[in-house]
Image (cartoon, rainbow, N blue to C red):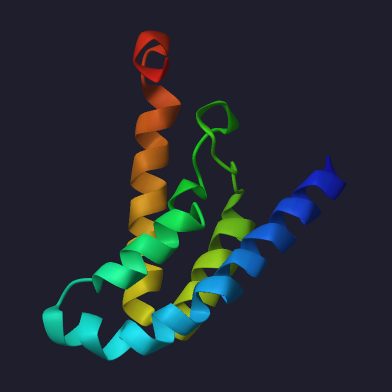
Length: 106
């Protein structure tokens, strides 16, 4: 199990590095618009980073709190707003996924 977690950790941090240029390029635009710049949203979705805390059954990574913080911190290192949005977005959608009825998940 620990090997699986380490593989997921490496994959998620590699995904952050792939989106880092977009995050850094859009940080000022996001700040000025007071919302995430569209290229940032697309990049985070493309790398499935909003699935950070989702249950595996729903296509998520089931990140434990330490891994979640590590990934969010890596994103926030490139763009603080994107890190905050990822923390809220991945956690809140995971709570819904964790507690929905099986019919809704299907």
